[in-house]
Image (cartoon, one colour):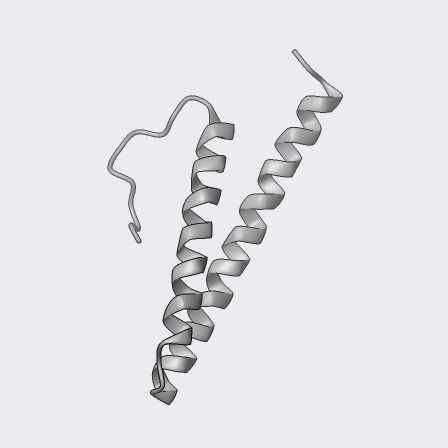
Length: 77
């Protein structure tokens, strides 16, 4: 996971949101796969927290995408 993007943001915010949403989906799948494969209690806790954090980011991004879609359906070009 990168904390800082090295490439300039795209002009189209919607495309960027969709790309971030897709990347978050992959990260969530990885967190669940890692959670299934650990037996150490500390690592189990870690992956539970990681999955919860990624779920929250997914929910936020999905809400942003829905807001953009709703605003577009109300005021199309």
